[in-house]
Image (cartoon, rainbow, N blue to C red; front, side, top):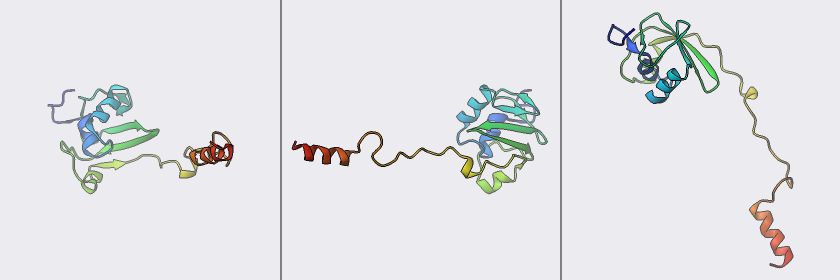
Length: 124
C-alpha cells in the first residue's frame, strides 16, 4: 500500500502523535520489526488509515493505539492525544524498574577523597 492512497506513512504518523521523539527513531523501529499494523510488520512507508491498530514496541514497553485521525505534521501533545485511542497495557510500577546497585561504604575502589586521605597518611 503506498502512502499516496489516502493514508499517511506509518513512521510519520507515529512521530506526529508523539509516540517517538524523532521520525528517524520511528523509521528505525519500523525497519527493525518493532511496529505492527493490524498484526503485520510494516515498513516505514506503509500507509495507515483511521481504524488501523498500531503496535509499537519501544524502550521495553509496548504501545497499542488505534488510529482515529491522520496527522502529517507534528502537533502539540493535547491535539496528538485526540488522534488515537490508547489501548496500551499500563506501564510497570516504578518498583519493578531496574534498581541501580548501591555499594556499601568502604567496599570497592576508594573514592578520590579516600585516596587523598590514604596518601596523606602515607606521607606523600
